[in-house]
Amino acid sequence: MIASSLLPKPRSATALALPLALALMWVPVGSSAAVVDGVQLPDGVRRVGEGRYRSALTYEKTLEYFRTVYPARNHRRVPIINQPGVRAMHIAFPAGNKYAGLNVYEDKAGLREVRIFLVPRGSASKKR
Image (cartoon, rainbow, N blue to C red):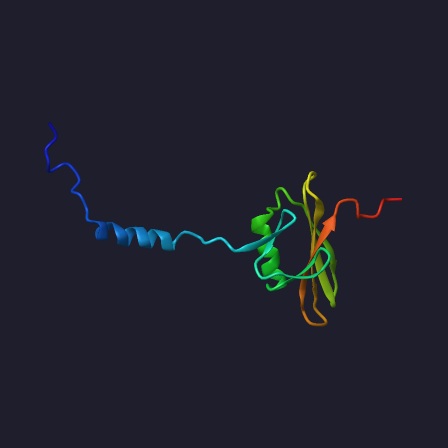
């Protein structure tokens, strides 16, 4: 027989609530997102045209968001342009998706808006 002094003493519900609440505070909360045709976009995007969206985040925060949603090990990144007036990044999707990828770009000279463009499959110009 096991001595009763070796068994853990039952705790009250309130004694367990504090450690549980503290543990839950450290659990990362995922960002909200909008899903458009199977593509996850940051929360707060506004549609501005066919396959075009305005991000509520900065350029850096938008790219950081996409790094978590579409990791670089599976989604190749290609800088499109980085000039004084504009910068842009293409994030390629693997085969089988409706879209070839998406472009994130910022007009640094004007309103500093960050836009997201969903690139349809087959829209890339053919190499000559």
